[in-house]
View 1 (cartoon, rainbow, N blue to C red):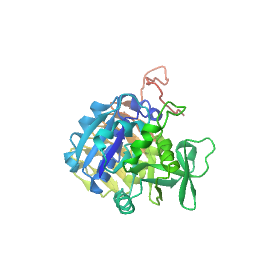
View 2: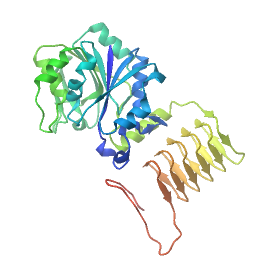
View 3: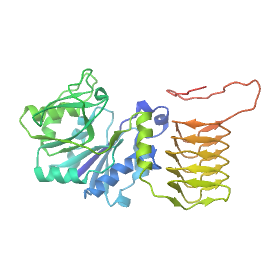
View 4: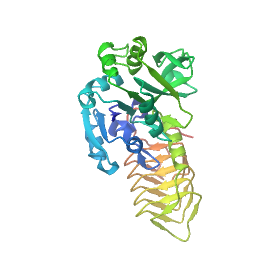
Length: 353
């Protein structure tokens, strides 16, 4: 069995972060989202992986390499334009051949992994196995309608969903999916939809097996989803201190201080991860916060946030529910006249009080 990871999506809902960085490499609990997918695939005993890439190809390749660190053999498949999930399957046919495969969207997290689901697919041998989860806002997802335990219809982001069962971003297929992706036409969005391809299998009498998962899953497409994913993954950490913590500082609960980091006259209340070579000075870092490498936090309070690498946050009273990108400076100025002075990229969001 092979695996296909889709990492070509631009992540428009996370701009401006994704103007300059691949959405799939934003860190959750100080680990790029894409790495969780690679770990899940390796844990499922799959070795050959094709990664579909787009505009951020170079960044993805630099981060993942040949996959050896996970015991994987990674190949890269370039998608010239974001023409849909089914289009990604279509262009990956030479890599996948006639073997069954799992398709994993690179910005999704399935906390319990996929090993048992892959084993179920290989044991039952349907033409396709789709994972479903009950959600509050099904109009954001592909939605399945079941009748007596069988899939009868699928619809992509419907205005009026027929159920609350959303398609999780992990799919399993045999070679019949190639017949489907070659037969369907682009949707109104101009994309080859994977929901249309699976509907084709259903209409042609192929077996599509639904599996409603009970564990935690998240599509990290929006800020609130990203922060929730960070919270869930931080809850699973084990305390570890590899950096320096001075006597005036306090670590409370589950806290990871990575190599080269320094905590000075600060309180860190976990679950929290402080990345390599960070400096936390005279500050409070509250629960569910991950701070990536080489970042300075001084005279500030941060809680329930994700801070990317090489940023500087100084003299800020309190920051929460935030995602701060790379090389960002957030500071309080004493200059006159007193005013907010902002330099923001496209699609930024700022809440002021």
